[in-house]
Image 1: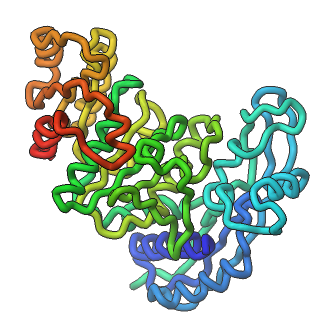
Image 2: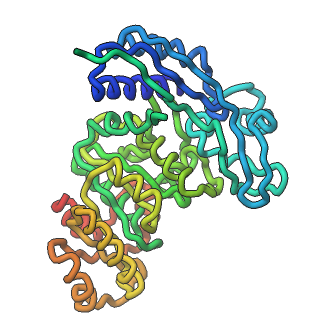
Length: 144
Length: 242
């Protein structure tokens, strides 16, 4: 369900970029997805294709790149990645179910509420990379 | 790098009639209580009303309205606000429950942007925005995306008035409309009206200064979604200015 919101946001952004830059056609859009956001990329791509038609943008070639989420503790300087602790955090958020709607999926910035530094147990850490979904670039053809 | 949230916020707020921002600069002055009182009164007047609780470290609106266990629900396009006594409510408490929220500046701005971009309010007559204390990320982020009238709340104490005046100066420097300052007599002390008016007059000559009387048992009233009679005169006067 949350993938729909993300897809709609990206399409709204592309539409406004098209209008602002006076593009007659939007041909390509590159998207970056941090794994912390737990986005189903196939579902996102399918929704982007549907919504780009619905919003009158026509056919766009979407490229979705993944980025590993990495963290660094502000207290002890330790670094770690989402893949190292994913299973334990997801177990806490979703229980027996492998994936679920959860606060970090909705708002990745809330990871500080649900995760601690594996070394010093502080919740004061920064997200170094790969924390949510970003539109990297939009390509198209200018109107005459 | 293009942030899609920036493009969604205006779209999500497009069906909202009026935005009213309740702040202070000082903590513990009754901002959330006043936001809730206003919400209940507007509801009684037949207005479709929402409250956005932007106090990320001390989110309390669901708790005040007896909805401390309410959690967020994902719907097509975003998050569905909770419906508490006829008021739509969105609060970080609905995402994190009673967990502490140790968030630094940038994280707070992003959380608030997500809440603004993805909350599906639909059409509202009034959106009341309950601010946290201070002039930090929540206020600054909000002011980038949301325009509205500001209600400023203070206690009738010299310390509170001193901090609140700085808050008002900040709002005025940005050209914000501050139609009402509410002196909230939370502690039930004898209010020196002359002192308060003297202090405020220089900075808020074009604003009304209203004193909210001490409201006995206010928490119990709000838990039941009810308004105490003693609050009505001031609340109605505030609404007249919105």
